[in-house]
Amino acid sequence: MITTFLFWNLNRKPIQSIISNLALRHEVDVIMLAECTIPIDKILLALNRSDGNMYHHAPNSNSSKRIKIFTKFPREFISDVSKQDDLTQDELEVKDWITIRHLQFPGTKDILLSVIHYISKCSYIDASQDTFSRNLSDWIKKVERRIGHSRTILVGDLNMSPFQNGIIKADGLNGTMSQRIARRKWQQIRRDGNKYPFFYNPMWNLLGDVNSETPGTFYYYNKEPVNLFWYMLDQVLIRPDLLDNFNAHELKILTSDGVSSFLSEDGIPDDKVASDHLPLLFKLDL
Amino acid sequence: MIDLWPKIESKELITPVTILRQQASLLGKKTKNILEAEIRDVKDDSGSDSDFHYAFYIIATALGFYRYKIMEIHYSMDLNPVRIEVEKSIYIELEKCEELKSPNIKFAQQDRGSWANSIEVNSEKDFFEVLKAIFGSNKVLRVISVLLAQSDSSYDPSLKEETQQ
Image 1: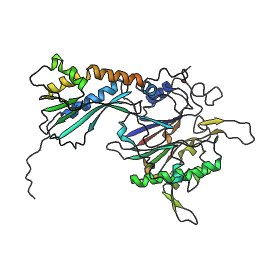
Image 2: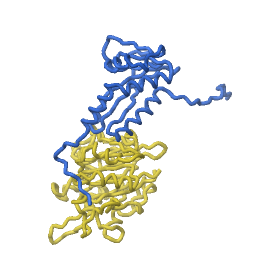
Image 3: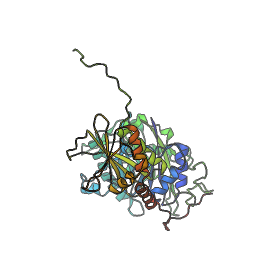
Image 4: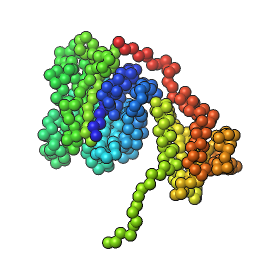
């Protein structure tokens, strides 16, 4: 069963009809929204404006209120498993940023969907983001042990680039650009002997403008001497146990809903039309 | 090993809870899932002699999933009779319904608490009639109106008008 996922940081914009257009155009099954201040009823009215599949709001019961999730499936199939009563003090630091859902569609492989809106560079320096990524990783691993598998997707606004330490370091998210390396499942580093499970990070394939219409998902220019201009802050990371169910060629940064372009004439996100972030679309064959 | 079981054929039976689930799914369609309905299996510690006991709730998904119970049903393996319990105000409305004036539909109002007002039916047809009356009752329609109105954020001045080219 092909399941289609959409993630978007809305930057508090009331763009529910654009979300609805995307959902219809791409037949999205699970919609994940960050910085969404649109009331639930407005989103539901927009998503369910036409006959056919109906979307439900799947609220976060134990986790971040910063993320909103809507799905065509009954919400019992996408339960919140982000228990907070077994978290360490360090792990509690991250509880407001992430929701972890157990997707259990009948007749298919169950997976863990971790949706995140990570701490921002506006409030935290890179070194702090890198430090907290360990807490984030530990919490994800804790849930994986509790559920009993590591078929996990991490998606959201990570507010870090794929090459930032918080994403690549072994005791952080351990996100590698290579599927072959990710399929090793884990790495051991010198000194501590621990096994650190990999994530595969397909976003590396979309950096630059050869494989993607835009070189990233967020544009920022501050006129400083060192400037990336484009940042890949919104990402999808996949555990190796799900690699056979994921086609990296179907991962896309979307620039239009078929009605309006999300980009200005300069080719950068136009927050007068949509958000200052671009949405991500990906699929899993479960 | 000798198989002593006869040939087991599954017959197409529509149980009362199946009927309720079908109706529950329709409420979401009518309200764009702003309201949904849910059937819950009631863990019955009251010593009821029913094999099956379910509660029917209307849920406001935009109001923190606030739940309002509309009815409970009880029945046994025979599937009939079905005892339907509703709150007093709905019960009083249903007692006056012409469509429910049938010897096969028994009303039994109790004095203890507002949730012991029961209607007993002995056929699928009568069950449908009672459900239709409950869903169309003034009380249920008022609950739906209020929940929809409470869920409506139209008057939030902090929302900007959306513009699209």
